[in-house]
Length: 152
Image (tube, rainbow, N blue to C red; front, side):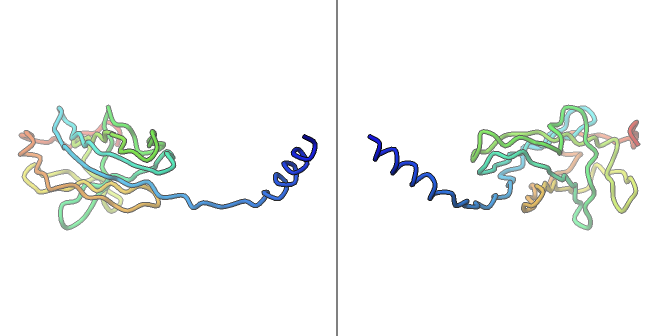
């Protein structure tokens, strides 16, 4: 028995090498459906991370010529510390875009056009951008958008 313990101790000491495993970036695996709810556009999306790390994301709305950062509305899962557990599975989330606040583009707030074609681009920090299908606010049911925002 004492030889077994001695061998076990020697093996434990010889296995002190640290093996670094690179962290895989969080990925967006889907965007949609995109729906209108009052003055908000609700963007459903999924995130996946092999390690199950919390994610930081950027959400942009693009009109074909440029992209602006979307103002987050109530009911959103946020853009910081977005969970990706259980690990290595598609985890559903919601981003709510307050269309009354418009977009943040080139250091200024700009309004939206209900007849324009838009896409949503979600980019995890350190990951690749993922772009939605084209959508039109009017097709989602918007009849007008007042550029009113209490936060700006």
